[in-house]
Every structure is written in C-alpha cells, then in structure tokens.
Amino acid sequence: MDEPGDARDTLLLANLGTPPAPTPAAVRDYLLEFLSDQRVVSLPRWLWQPLLRGVVLPRRAAPVAAKYASIWLPGGSPLEVHTRELAAAVQQRLPGVEVVHAMRYGGPSLAAALAQRRGRRVRVLPLYPQYSTTTTESIADVIAAQGGDAALAVRDYHLDPGWIAAVAQSVQAHWLAHGRGEHLLLSFHGLPQRVVDAGDPYAAQCEASAAAIAAALGLDAGQWTLAYQSRFGAGRWLQPATVDTLDALAARGVSLVDVVCPGFAADCLETLEEIGMMLAERFAERGGRLRAIPCLNAAPAHADALAAIARRAFDGHG
Image 1: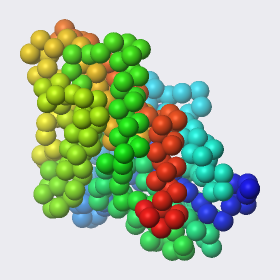
Image 2 (image 1 turned 90 degrees about the vertical axis):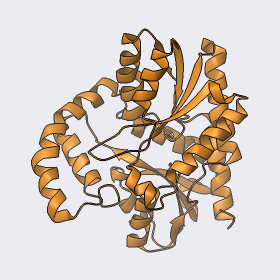
Image 3 (image 1 turned 180 degrees about the vertical axis):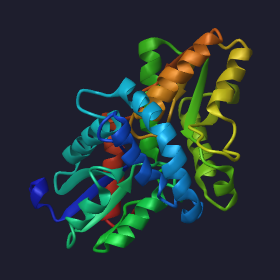
C-alpha cells in the first residue's frame, strides 16, 4: 500500500483561513487578503481598497485580534488546529491518497499546495457544505489560476447522507451528555441578500440542510429554527439574524437553547467567540442559557463522510 508521500492522488481539504497569531499585525494582514477578494467584497477596487486600508483595517485589526486571543489554543488558531486534525483523520481512511489541509486565505496556502503538486491528480474538497460564489467559487478561482490536473471534489455536500448523519449524531451526543435544551437553533454564516438575489444558491442550501438535520433528529417545526450570523458591513443580510432570533426566544421565555452551526466544518472565531461567548453572554443577560454544540471538527463520523465524498470524486462520481 502506498504511503501518503508516494501517493499519485492528493486530497486537499480547503478551509477559509485564519491569522497565524492573535496580534493586530497578523490579523491586519489576514483581513487584507480576505477582504481584498472580490468574491467576498465586490465593490470596485478603486473605491474599496482605500476604505479597506484606511478605515476598516485600522479600526478592526486590534478588536478582532483580541477576539482571537480569547479562543487561541496552545497549538494555534482553533480553525487551523481542528482542520489539521480533520485532515489526519481523513488520511487514516484514505491510505492510498495524500490528504493535506490548506487555507484559501493565510497559511498553509491553497495556491502553494496546488503549485507543489502539479503533475498529480488533485481533488480539492472545500470545507463548505453549502455552496456560495463567495466561498466555494473563490476556491475554484485559485484552482483555475494554478492550472494542472486539479479540480473541485464537489461543489457542495449540503444533503450528503453521511454528513447529515454526522451533524445529527453530534447533536444527539450533546443531548445525551447534557440533557436536551428547549429549542435547537441552527446558525449558519450570513450572506448579503443581494448575493442571493443574484442567484447564489447558498440560502436555499442552508434551508435544505437545516430541514434534513431536523428531520434526522425527529424534530417538529416548532422545536428548531434556522438563523444567520456574522453580519459584516452595511446592507441587508439574510434573515432571520441569529442575534435577533435569540432575543425573540428569550422574550418568549425560552430559557435553554442549544446552538449548532452546521455550515462550519471546524470550530473557529464565529462559533467559539461569537456564539459561545458573545451571544451566550447576551442571552444570559436576558435570563436564558445558551449552549454551543461543538462543530464536527475531527469527529470520526465527519472524517467518514468526507472520505466517502473524496472516494466518489476520485472514482469520477463526485
């Protein structure tokens, strides 16, 4: 059996990215790369770049660095640590394939990983269950720019049975260990409404994922809610907002809410700090208790699901 380093095929698990350190300088460099991607911010460069460099980054770098510092692990950024561990878990299930992780922004660089593997058959699996032009298509841009025999493994896996089962199992495990909350909130990353209005299927896929997960858990309509978090900038974003939904639940007298974030493959700033700290504190101030269910991270069921997706991609059935 081939060792990973001798494998003809490579699977790149691609996540969004993270700064290398919880410092203002590192966060500034990371945000500069991230927010300069026109898939993320589509404003004309002549308008956006002066605003980004002169207003947004000077104001946001230090506060965002403090948020990262509050969740930083001994091994680095949680997103980096968990994505690396997930790649190792998938590697165990694909012994004939080299499995490595890469980031669209920051390091380890997706572009560099592709450049190093020219001449090999590479499949890139974006760790975004739901497709969006702002995320998955940005990874496709990098693949196209690098050339070679690389391709997306899948555009999305928002209804993949193995993935749906893995999310449902994670919720059930949380309930088994801690008891069941009064309400389950499924929180996905937000997106500007104009992007969806232009034809992006992200919101429809989030809705389909949430409904499938709720069905797998045997939940009735009144027992769960879908919402969108992490709004950035001006303009209308997808509704309902997670923060508003939690406020409404508190106003109804719901005192114990479990929150799961199915759109995030690995725990990160948005799940650990925004949900687990900031919104948990806000909900507590309104008399309730919010419990953040960990992302799938390197859970065996998650690694099983992604390995199965990768096998189909290499077999030509992705």
